Picture (cartoon, rainbow, N blue to C red):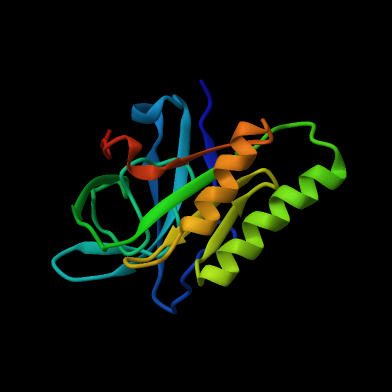
Length: 163
């Protein structure tokens, strides 16, 4: 089975000393798939997440992580106090419905002061800082999930699992 990679083209945080690592998505039900993550240096060989995870459960922006000798993310050492809300828009939506849903996610995230990263045009990962009021965004997600235009979840719906 060949490996496939999900990349973060526009990480939430950009610094001069970033590095890239990989997370194996097999423990989360995606065998043969890896997610590239952007990290900032910390201390004692640890790193700080600088992107909003698309498919990794139990991991958020600014969490402190450990890598193995091959550069694979293996452990969340310390939580950074943020949460990740993820949405997947249904395939084949009419263009005006698609624009309403994608635009609604972006505008509500922006008004809440939340960073948003997109994987393609249908999958959004939204960073909700500690104390951030996500009620409007969650209500929007709930309404559109009920209407069948998207599915959404919090990343902590499952714990992080290393390879």
